[in-house]
Length: 140
Image (tube, rainbow, N blue to C red; front, side, top):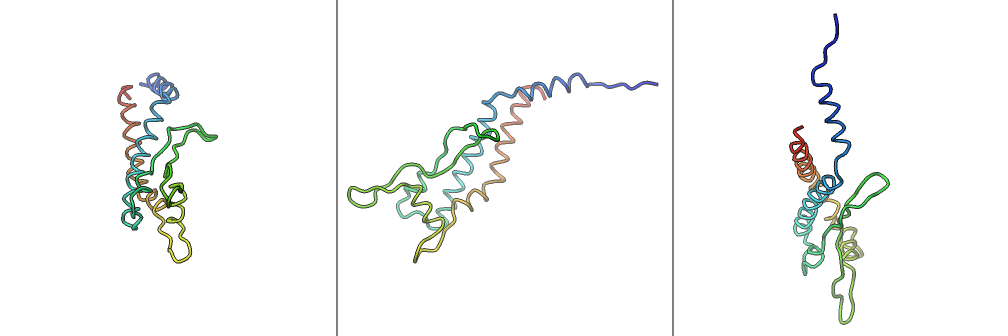
């Protein structure tokens, strides 16, 4: 009586291919998720009334994926500056911060946090789709 294993060699090869997944696949997954978070955060800001000029919501973007101590990450935030009176500017991140946490006589409108939370499920689905596309391309 012996043990028979069918497909074990193929499984080992599949794991080897997964361990050598190109950075471009991971970057694509992160980019797909970031696009969802950006869109849903803008929509959440609109629903909270963060749209007097539309500049802050329109400035929400993400950087290219970068290496971190834990792997890779994409940072999503309002970029750039907006006019704040004659010959003055204010960073869009500062405007978003005030909207997010409020100030005297202005209640908080946590559109960044709530938007990211609302986007989580759809973002993960988009990232999974990119990963599944990679697996399919490898015949896995």
